[in-house]
Amino acid sequence: MTRRLPTVTDLVVAPAVTRRLENVTVRMPAVTTLRTAGAVTRPLENVTPPAKLVLSLFPGVDLFGEAFRLAGCSVVTGPEKLFGRDIRDFHGVPGRFDLVIGGPPCQDFSSSRRGPPSGLGVEMLRHFLRIVAECDPPAFVLENVPRVPDVRLDGYQVQRFDLWDAECGGRQLRCRHFQYGDRRGWICRPKRQPVTPRGTVRGAVTRQVAVAMASQPWQNGRSFRDHCRAQGLPGSFRAPGLRKRALWWAIGNAVPLGMGLVAAEAVLAAGPRDHAADCLCGCGRLVSPRAVTATAACRKRMERLRRGGAPGTPGRRPVVTWP
Image (cartoon, helix red, strand yellow):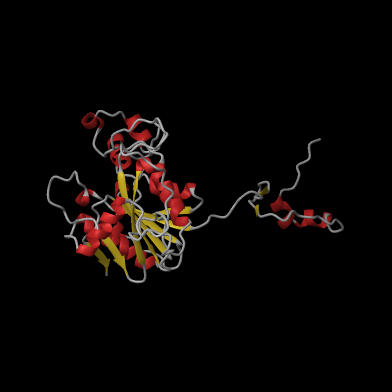
C-alpha cells in the first residue's frame, strides 16, 4: 500500500498529524525555505540576495537592465512606449531603489538626424531627472549618444565618461556616453580593453562590423540575425508582443550588451575619487605618476574646458536640469 507523506503545510495546519509528532524531536536545516500549500519544501542554500534593486527607465528591450541583472542586481522596468505606456504618467517611489538607470530617446541628439530637433529629447531627459528626484536613490546612470546634453540634479555629483563597443569586447564602431550621478561624489572606473587605432582590440582577430542602427535591413544590408548578434544577442532573439519592425528598431537603439555589462560592473564597483591616480577629465582611467590626464583625448577635453569651448562641443555642452 502506498502511503502519502504529509507536506510542510500538513504538518503545520493539520491537528491530527501534529499530535503524532508530540514526542518526536525534528531538527530543521538552517536554510531559507519556500513554503507553498500542498507542495514540497525547497531549500535555498545557494541563493545569493541581489546586490542592488535597480529601476530601469526607457527600457525598450532592456539590454541595459539585462546587463545589471547579469552583474547581480534585481531590476524593475519602468513604462515603455512600445507597449503603450507613457513615462509622463509614471512617478517614482522614494527610498525603494538603490539605483535608477535609463537611456532616454536619442534621436534629437544623434549625428544621423537630418531635420530640426523635436524637443522630445530634452523633455525626456527632464522626466528621467524628475523620476530620479522622486525615487531619491544613492546613484543614477544615464546613457545616450555622444551629443546628449549634460544633466545636473541637486545633491548629485555627475561623472561623464564614454565607452566604445570595441573596448568592451564588441565588434561595432559604436560609442555611447554615460553620466553617473552619485550623492557621495564617487566615480566609476570602467575596465576597458586596449584598442588599436583602427578600433579593434589588440591581439584580437575579430572583424569590425557596422553599427547596429535602428534602420531596416534593406537599408543597411544586414540580416536580422546579424543585427541581433552585433548587439550581443542570439540570432534567434524574439520579444513577445513586438512585430519584427518594432523589434529591429528597439534592438538598434539599445546599449550593446557587452558595453552595458562593462558599465554595470563599473557602477557597482564605484569608489571615492583618487586625485593622484584618476584622470582629471573624469573618464575613469588611471594615470601614470606625475600625469593628470590619461590620453591625448583627455588632454584635449581639459583644454577645451579651460578655453571655455563653444556650447555643443566636448567640454562644454548644453545642460539639462530638474526642476
